[in-house]
Amino acid sequence: METGRKHLTKHNESHNIPLFKTIEVMSRISGLGENKLRQMIGNNEVDYIENGNRKLLVDAALWDWYERNKISVHFDQ
Image (cartoon, rainbow, N blue to C red; front, side, top):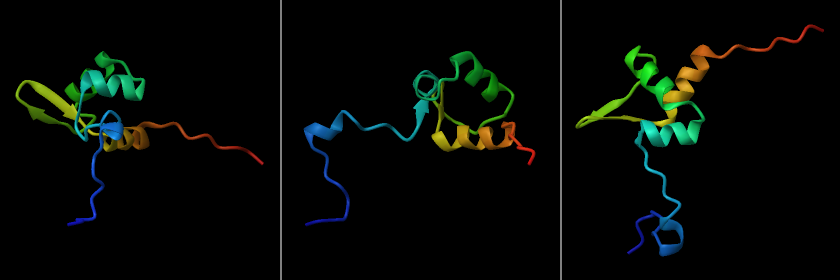
């Protein structure tokens, strides 16, 4: 019975990216250093969850931080 969810095959299983990512994984994905991510967590600049002794992040937390901290370019015309 089809539930509307895409069924996983061996071909696309290797492309799955978890929703919650460790600091190490998020560092590789985002290009921000692990220490910078730890500093952002320590300064309560990004939302995260704790799972045991690990702090886990989601992409949206970094996009939210980016939106709050970006320097916008304004062109004079």
